[in-house]
Image (cartoon, rainbow, N blue to C red; front, side):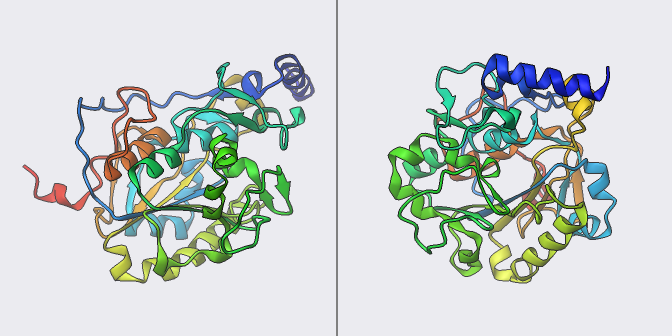
Length: 327
């Protein structure tokens, strides 16, 4: 099959289906351990900073000296998988436990940002909970930062729901796909331009999205490597902060050539490292984890319930320093 034919068929599926459903697909990571029933909340960290980069195979990232060094200083999840192609459903999965690729009645096109030519990244309006609902219900603090986000105020009174502005892309800021951000405009004060990030005023949950160059989407991997190392340098140098802060560096999906996406012929393993005083620095895990596992880890740590995830998703359990003395 030619590339031209594949492109034509992707266009046909988008027109026929009218949503991302026909032009995106879930990917299944190898089966990981099953979660035990009734996992009790375990407070491994007081703060988590989740940083998401773009579209690269784990093997390629692990071969970059700066990223290999980052892994040596943290805990490498060496068998960690994204859950879909293309990018957008992975972002949704990271914050809601669902890719929304299926025909879910809670999903419609977002009238502000949807365009069918975006194919699997076409923006949706989702009437379902995200991790922000659970954090709010539990009274756990949170902040979301996006580089070049159009609302430049330190405390925005509204969310910007447009699809794109300069090097900012809404598809990489999944929270704005959820109806709750329309019905709770006060939440928009927590969605801010990255210029307002302060490591000395961290909320419990912090999500950070670089722009389209610094996340590696519209630029070579080197751009993301330089950015992430510069961004992390002052954070990891603060030992008092890192004693109780978990930093997660992950990628949304593996590199995604068009034909590989269309036929589902490539593994979806992505580089993911945990940094913090609570992790076993310099070690790694071969347990099969995924974006769902990371979300479950955050849920368990902060005691968020009910879980956003389907039954059987286990949190990351082998990264923590206490396991050195556990019998």
